[in-house]
Length: 227
Image (tube, rainbow, N blue to C red; front, side, top):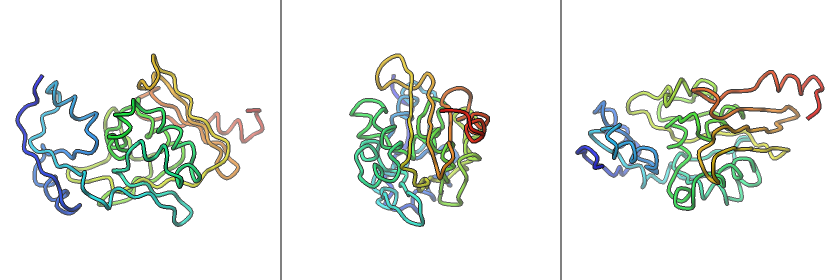
């Protein structure tokens, strides 16, 4: 099918992008586009304006500061898979990125787009919740536990753009185990397990409208249950 008519703006700055998105309730940001464009083709989404974030370099960085890993919203899956800072500071993030889609998806899709889309079968939201990450937007910093509010829903307001995700550094024992029909499918169900400063963090993918933190399992492990 063919999308409904829309206007297109390639933003030259984050301020321009936020202004354009704030001025039109039907405007939508465009990151990788792998979720939005299929919805537009089916006319399930009919934005009046697409604001392309592709050229915004301030959203494309990966750095370590303040004892945390800072990942820009426009960082692509393929970079997360191979970036040495990510692989050393938070290997579960690199290993999860390697399981997303096919090479085309990994080279176009972005972490910020995935987080903002809030698909319950998405992998990054589960890591964000399980690791107590923070979602930094153009207006505020939101704990991941408060960011996802329902099926494809977040606290983001019209015009508000995800700038970066801040993860704790955690290079200890970990695993992201994902079950799908085929390799690189969306998760039918998945579990993220990571040891952070002596404590186990466990979160589940696609068992509800938002990522679920398995706190009773964490408490059992803290009380001495065997892994």
